[in-house]
Amino acid sequence: MAIERGLLTYEDFLAMPEDGVRREILDGELVVTASPVTLPQLVLGNLNDIVRGHVRAHGLGSVFFAPLSVVLANTTVVVPDLVYIAADRSSRLGARGVEGAPTLRRAP
Image (tube, rainbow, N blue to C red; front, side):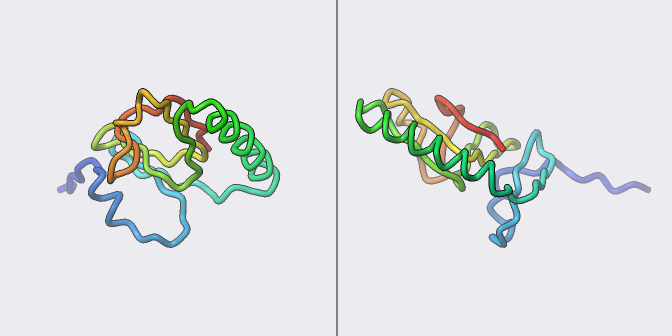
């Protein structure tokens, strides 16, 4: 007899260890990805500097660097490398991270 396992949820995501392993939940399934290598991190750092500088200079909202949870649904939690939330979407920021789709995200 097969044992049925339910879909993973945000609560399961919170219970996972904070051990440096990059984990996301997509449609209830656990996705584990490798740590980024040097060149993409350099590019991401430069992108962060450019986007954050522009957003701050023009009062457009907030920019966040990973790790920050983006809860798209109770069974879909992603941790993009870079997240931009426009000022008119600031209500999406909460205790769990970003609730719903951000204005822009750079996924791994």
